[in-house]
Length: 529
Image (cartoon, rainbow, N blue to C red):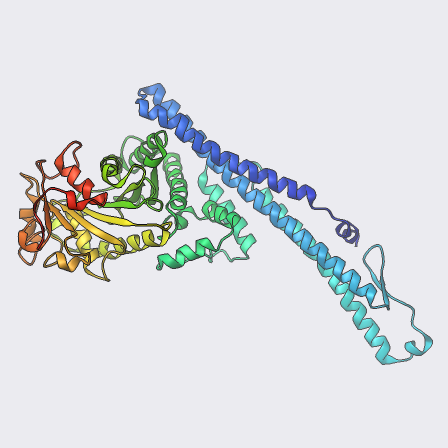
């Protein structure tokens, strides 16, 4: 039992030092990826660098940025493997020392230099006593089994670590999906999970998801992010910054996989994903309070995404904008620019750095006004998901006062209505603003589960949608712009269906007052009641 001698005197200081070095490397890679976004790709995109050289250069820099993320993920996984090796070896060594101590304390046994347990010579009387010989033989075997088990425990820890570490040689930095698969194996080994059980909550209860996350160690949180970014990124109730980290990894993975398949970067889903990443890179180069957080991402079909300008978890005032007909992943860059305008305008009333804005494209929006937008099904299917999202915002907010405004544009207002009318309303929502609404599926504002006087409507000149809505989507004969609906009618100075958020207008300013908690100062054509 040559391993016995090694384990008896085993030092884990070198493994501990290696763990620390790999963990530090992981953090360095993550930090440099952030620096790259904020100080390299972001400023270059903000400058509007164009042309063939720009395309080739940005593509190479994007790969470098992605490789930093993959390297960080793999370094983290290696650090966890090494830490588990340290823990396994130290536990085995403790067990071995305890087994040797117990054997020798018995008084009848000694442990040789190679780990063999021997019994002291028996007296003649003892040799002729079957009970004594059986007991001596049995107890010696028990002591030997404990010693052998400790040595085998150390052997298993070493072999398991070696098997996992071989996955990282040579390093593969070009495929984020490979890094996630490696991290999943490490996490499953660390947690003792079977491959079909990732240990994640099912996501049905945002508070339970929040509690699960709070109960994890920092290392386990990092490993879940590395191993299951898509699953972590969709969990309502987790901190927005955590979901952002997860979904940025998902975004990079989707871009890498579609690029590897030879998809064109100038059209389709890959184009939309690249445009979203470009828009986020530009924001990363600007003030931190306007940083974009990617809260959810699903590129399948037309695509779904949820993103914020600013961090809703840390501010007092948050608007959640629900877009309408025709909204898809390709609109996210423009939607984020509009959300940025809303946040900046609202800061005049809610305080600088105290306002965040969310664009919620967490549903399958109607593709066309006719016939799709005449169908209530899209809104009724989306309502529960919108409620769950607001429930997640409640669970992840970091204390202090909270004021939330749901903003629905066009068919998005119908989605807001579908979410607010059932299940006790939209959790945490204080005000509702609807612009160009075709109807909200309710008789009036009193059915939307917000305090009286906190539903606000807007109808611009030459916006045909409210009139069309009375025919198709308002089964009770009036839309929110109708005085009988019971909403406050905000003054609007824009025209058409899509300019309610035009900079420098009363339309935007009046919404900003409501979002910033100063609705009593907003200019209205009439007020409810």
